[in-house]
Length: 98
Image (cartoon, rainbow, N blue to C red; front, side):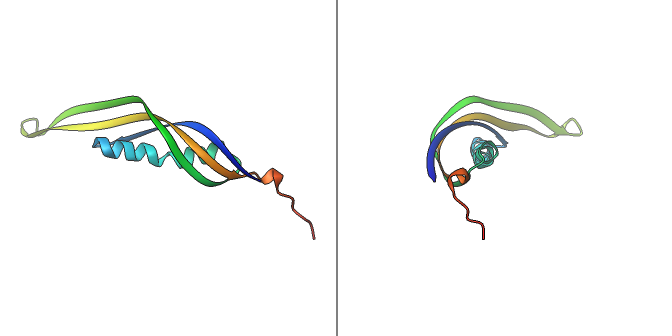
């Protein structure tokens, strides 16, 4: 009834800092695992994180082309996360009709 299995998911995230980009990517792990599995999930434990791609995009902007010049950066990451999943397999549960 209760099963353990490993799964590798690819997630991506964006943010205005490195930490926010990683946090955004890791927050998508649960939703990605839920979409790929038809079991009832009890626990999702990340075991390994590998960075596939990490980018920073810098954009210069100014007010009226001359005033208050600044550089705005956007960070994006793509991660491969290996997770251990504990789930209940509904096919192995016997339901009794009344």
